Length: 139
Image (tube, rainbow, N blue to C red; front, side):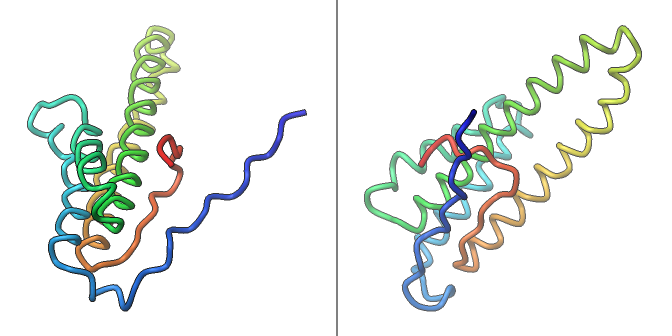
């Protein structure tokens, strides 16, 4: 029988109202989310930006580190979703059933775009954001 994992822990409580965080911290947090858009420039690894920001800021900026870790987990999850989805789509496309997965990949792409923008707005406003349906690789 497999053990049920505990529910995800909420982010640590914020110190003061959301808008009271330093602008530098909020900018790094926002950049952690928006850096995923390097894929639109042809860079195939959307998790590199969040990874670099998490590695650089994790010991000095807890707020930016939380957002960078969340963005990193989401981007890693989406890389897996797109990779598996693309492989399954191409393999099964020869049977015509794979064509039904194309709308799923399109929906995943739209969700990725919208959720990254939403997370960046929350970060810019000094608020915490947790992506839905994300595997938490980094804790």
